[in-house]
Each structure stands twice: as C-alpha cells, then as structure tokens.
Image 1 (cartoon, rainbow, N blue to C red):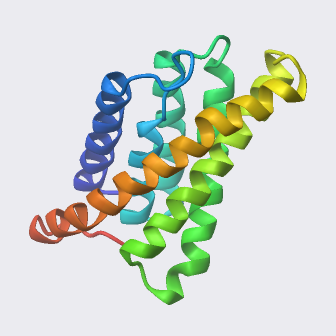
Image 2 (image 1 turned 90 degrees about the horizontal axis):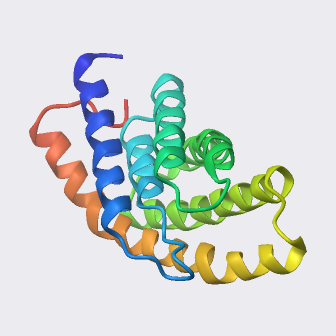
Length: 174
C-alpha cells in the first residue's frame, strides 16, 4: 500500500471523525455514525484487504474514543472491524455490475443496517442492554434513520470523491 493511499484513507477517516463530532444527536443524544459513511467510501475507493482491515480497525478505535453510547467502546471496535469486511465482501460481489452511485447508495444503506445490528448485538451481550425492547427501540430510532442519512450523504459525496481521486491520479478501485 503506497503513501498516497494511506494519506487518502487517513483523510477520509479524519473527515469522518470531524463529521461525527459536529452531527447533532437524534434520539437521547445518539447520533448517526458519519465515520461509517467515510469508512464505506474508503472501501469503495480502495477495495483491497489491507486497506479494508486498516480502515476498519482505525475507524473502530476512533469511534470508540468518541462514542456517546454508555459502554460503547468495545462494541464500536467489534462493529467497525466486522462491518468493514462484510461491506468489502458485498463490494466484491457487486464489482462485476460496476460501481455506480446507486450501488454505492444501496451498499451504504445495507452496510449501515448491518453495522447497527452488530453494534447493538455486541452492546447487548457485553454491556447488557435491557432486553429486546431496548434493541428494537434503538434500531428503529437510531439505526434506520442513520441508514437513510448515510445513504443520502453517500449519494452526494461518492461522485465528488471519484472525481477528485481521478484528478489527483490516485488509483481508486485498485
């Protein structure tokens, strides 16, 4: 992995961290995870195992450090690492159909729902959410709205990022 790719991944994760910090909470302080959108963008632009592993772990660690969810540190690391590789598998499966804004949007929606499910399950098992009612409430009030927001953001930023990376002559989709 060359320096340009590493710098690009770092910029995307950094942008995600800043967005995560400025996005207001939507339900009892819980907020959509904009770092997740940037992680997905990084995977779409650099779909290789090393980049996916690196961006998944780093995003998980930064999310853990900035989470507002009580006891959400370990669930964040677990969630982002697993979600990164699941998302990567979907990217590889859909690669033969081409990477379009529509496919990026669909992958983002599905990826966000998978991420939210993994996070809430890990939190339930490790921290002890009070039963299935809390899981369902958080899924409906945080995960699903986050999926909608992340999808809209991806529709906006994916074509812009592709254009920038082509102009900068950074090998995207490598």
